[in-house]
Length: 465
Image 1 (cartoon, rainbow, N blue to C red):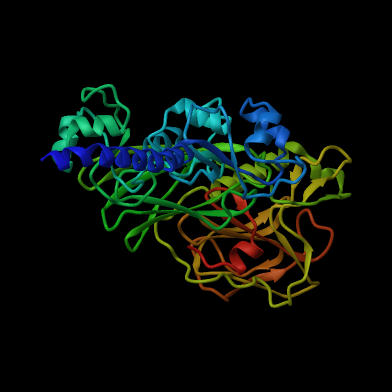
Image 2 (tube, one colour):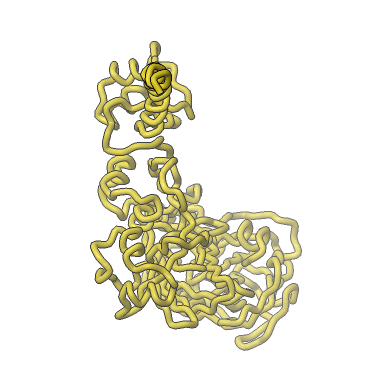
């Protein structure tokens, strides 16, 4: 016993020294992991980074061993000394479609002030889809939690009962004050579950925006997938109602963006209800991008510039192309509406002036050149108008279903009439020089969701949906 007592202080001292030796690096590593850091982005300078985080530039340089402030490398990680209001490494995350300020807070379990401060977000409406948001990349252990929408009059207790989760855990994960706090249409994360998808839509719904991606004059495809769950859907974008059509297990809407829409964020709104009666609402700012269209000056007979005549005829055509036939009448690609090789005398979207004033007009289709020739139906459909118009000349307008229409203008002859069922490749008229025209050609238009869209690249070279 005495021998043991003699050795035990030595052992204790050795253990203490080992403990001190080992604890140093471990503590340092823990401190490093929890320190604030930043991934250098294109266009960054040391002074910009220091100003963004309210740091002294010399302090920032010393903390990162920077001797030449002009030698910064994109992707390099900088330690942010003295920044104690968040931990982790900040990198740019493009805000996905289907996420909102609230859903990002919940998915990453961050305070709104942190998102606002790191991303320069003053108003949550700034967060349009694609917004380059600075987010800590190493927060949140499980970002694939399932989600449930709050129906009318539903409490967290009801939601917990139908989803098999704990109401207090739901409240905590969604940063709610208590189990009594619910808002109709809100989408809540369900802890203890695992299902991928955008955070602002209930499980198992996902949203994809493809083709065009909200560009001036292009056709955008919105697809909601629900894993076979039946949905009732509606929506709105820049004053146009979105009409969804079922394709297998998915729901698809085709919507054009007007060529003269000012490039900036606009509100996308979706409303839905599942077959079980669960309602949900979703809204997000999405960015309309510039289409890169050119300009041209034209000289025409002043008689054709009568504003009243122009507006009346445009309103008439808009009325014809507004109805949405639920049946999809076309298959595959559209075909070229003339037998000629592709020869455009004018392209879509070009900003025009007829009087030397501002470029407030645009070319709403493509012009196929040719002194004579056949006009060919681009896809299966139903004729809704065939007759003379003052500006567009002899015109044929065809409904292809789902809100998609084609227009064939300035014809010398028309071979069909309203109500006719027409087939892809069918000869429906002849090229001419009627209406506001300076030479024989076919002016061909495509309308999607009540909007003229780019016909050639969108509809001759792309298969929708």
